[in-house]
Amino acid sequence: MAANGTSTDDAPSSDSPLLRETSRSREGTGEGVDRKIETAWVTPKRAVLAVLALVLVAGLAYGVWTTATGGQALNVDREKLTVSTVKQEPFQEFIAVTGTVLPEQTVFLDAVEGGRIEELYVQEGAMVEAGDPILRLSNNDLRRQVLNSEAQIAEQQNQMEQLKLSMEQQALNLQQQIADMEYQIKQLRRQDDRQERLHERNLISEEAYLSTRDELEYQQRRLELTQSAFVQDSLSQETRLTNMEDTEQRLQRNYEVLRESLDNLTVRAPIDGQLTALDGEIGQIIRSGTRLGQVDKIDDYKIRADIDEFYIERVQPGQTATTQPIGGSEYALRVTRVYPEVDNGTFQVDLQFAGDAPGGLRRGQSVRLRLELGSPEPATLLARGGFYQSTGGNWAYVLTGEGEAVKRQIRLGRQNPNYFEVLGGLDPGDRVVTSGYDTFGDADRLVLE
Image (tube, rainbow, N blue to C red):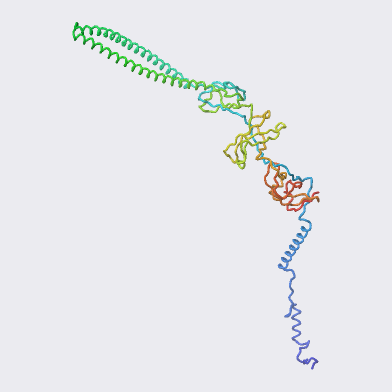
């Protein structure tokens, strides 16, 4: 018996068939019933977790670094930056507009009457005086109307003369009749007086006496009727003559209009000035109302400008404007008229020079203006620049005394073509990078070299 209390007879010997078979099986396949399985250390899950851990560590490191250094910095060339100083000055809000030079007065030449152009007296661009002929038209129909009107007037005047002659003859005949009747009445009165005395003495018969008196009464009645007819006839003739005179006056007025129309066939300069446009050639048929050209009074000029409709409520007559230098000098203007119509998003205003207009102006010349929108007011000002396109005026790089510029939140208000009004974030004396920020990326600080 063995020491461990196990019988040696129960354990297989090294020479037993079972052990030999087991040994051969392990040597032939390299595997056994108790083989240990090997596991890989790098797995996809472990790789993802490792990457996330690295990103987290890098983010924390960047946060610590930017906090310690003041944010992401970018080295820039100082010479390539535009730096403006914030200042306290009166702020004048104005807008830049472009105006067009126009004559102070322009008179158009329109064909009052149609016709055919027969003659051109001057050419476009010529200087003319009021009343100078510019071109002549012909119109045969109008000439015939004038001749017919003249004939009607002559006929009416002839009828009036005949009526006057007839009235005179009629009046003369009636007056002659009245004179005869008055003479007869006078004779009959004498005869009646004699017969009355004779009748009282019974020297004549009653019949003779009454016959003379009846004749007297008849003639008196006849005289009254004739005088009344004379008055009525005179009134009737006068009325007829008045009507004919009225007709003649109407014919005269019609004739004068036709004569004026005939005179209008010669188109004349309405004012002293320059004939800046003339549209017509000899032989051309022109209709009534056709625009033939225009005459400009070039002694004085005005400016007409188009302004964005955004400012329509802020532009009023009397506001002032200043030109960009013309011939080395600036000129003041005053708004004289604001046109209420809005066309394609703009409205128009007329401006007149406050003093003498600059010499050498020409119709159609462009002039740049600064139109003031109010009175100057004290304000904190920052020069305009390309930075506004990148920041919208919400922040800017402000220089420090350490040779760098840092981001700062700001607030801007009104603006004109030169300045922004600063409402917050900046003080007078601050220096601000006002050039464009397109190349700076997300830098929090600019290190100036």
